[in-house]
Length: 128
Image (cartoon, rainbow, N blue to C red; front, side, top):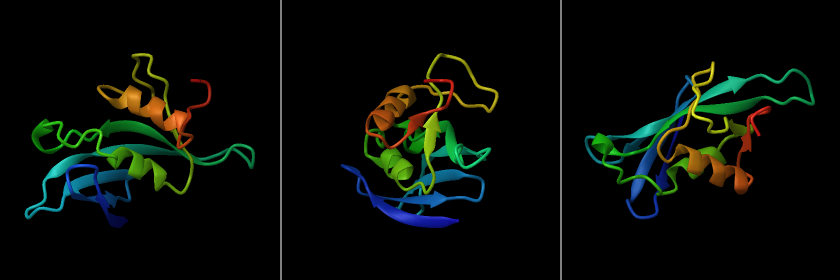
């Protein structure tokens, strides 16, 4: 488990905590801290040296306290994806929930396309 402080574009500092459950939880640094949201990952083990381990994003919610939307488009998701030590993938948004629970809603599909376009993530194999 690790924690770090990230300075958003317009909302000040937030605390990001990586849990043992492969989830990045984001909270305000206020006292008491308020939950902003989280990104949940599923660790996929590679079959061999040509198929490396990676994380697939299964759920994203970074709307801010009480779902206000104040923390969207503040760079938090990009910070989390960029901090990953192994590759990150997304399922293509086709409106279906995957067997692993993965699905993107709201701003998720646009965020995934942006991260893939920037080379910070990839589409899950077979989804591209």
